Length: 410
Ligand code: B12
Image (cartoon, rainbow, N blue to C red):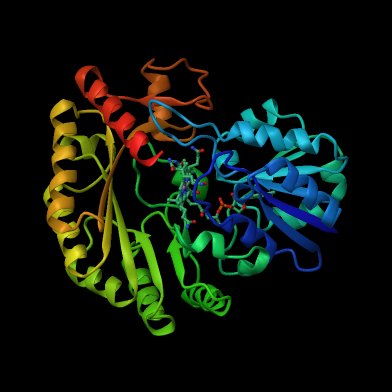
């Protein structure tokens, strides 16, 4: 069969993210004729899709809907509008349309209901289900269906096919995504990762991950980024993988999200293995705030790890939220103070601190507790953004901060 894999457009100029989900799917579709287009790198997504349809004359179109919105408060960008536009283009095309992706997975029933042009929706991992659906085309053509895919066995899937798209547009900003595990063992109340990939870590064989990195290297790519929720857990897997990377591709330039509780030796090992940027997501700054979000950790440990990471030569990103439960104006001022001092003391261009606002998602523990305590109606779907903003002065200050940031960075 001829399959056209499509990354839904972002609808605005922003650095593109390599469609890793589509690469994993393409890797499983041996025996089919696969082509791919990432509409987020084309200024006119509709025209690019029409052109791809004409060029590849596919039997099936599979769209990856990565994002619903940019989770930004108070101004939120909806990625559903550009998605609607491409469904509009597909209304003039007669074949079946399948949709999956993390954004789709979070709100699959609502999106199926909203968009009639979707013939088959796939919530969850597509590696096993997509080939099976293609085998039985009847399932796709015989009425609209939402499929819930079960978690795949990561040791038996074939590797992602990184050659589906040129890698150059993705390398410069984020680096091409590499995935070494799925799911998350941490239980942060607002987070969707466990809903998307399951509770607990499912690790790929270290050899498969190193293989991906070698293939990226062969394709001329030297900047990559692990898309895993927390790269340094579980510890034994992390250390084995790190040793492998150091040996396979020491000249690479890569980044990962890590836990602030990481020890000093592991931070140095990360730097020795070519890691150039680590991101921490303490989210809250006070112990009470962290606990309220279901997180371990404390501010002193964060500061120590940030310092150590910079001392080891890595760039550092730190992500906070404003408006967390149990955190008010003093916490926001503390985050600003941390932002200033970290950037001034540890290198302005090498230390970034981001302050966002929790966007509540369907599938998170927070969404359930908000329904229970009556802060949202019991049938709230969280498809239209629901935020957990700060109150009073902390909210007003944050809005000014966001306006200034937008004016500076667009
Ligand atoms: C890593 C990551 C990033 C990294 C990417 C780094 C990189 N170099 O790739 C960075 C930091 C850049 C990033 C940015 C953003 N991200 Co992000 N990101 C993720 C994360 C953690 C992993 C995504 C990933 O690569 N997964 C690995 C691949 C293999 O899996 P997959 O894409 O899900 O594909 C599988 C299935 O979904 C399915 N599938 C996918 N497509 C299709 C299509 C068909 C037809 C079928 C059948 C199946 C199928 O099969 C695939 C294989 O199993 C997810 C959360 C998560 N756990 O998924 C959030 C996530 C996708 N991000 C999210 C958001 C909001 C953003 C930003 C908008 C944040 C911001 N404010 O800037 C930006 C958007 C950037 C952009 N232009 O798209 C949200 C999206 C939900 C939403 N709100 O809309 C998520 C879900 C996190 C969350 N908050 O819940 N992100």
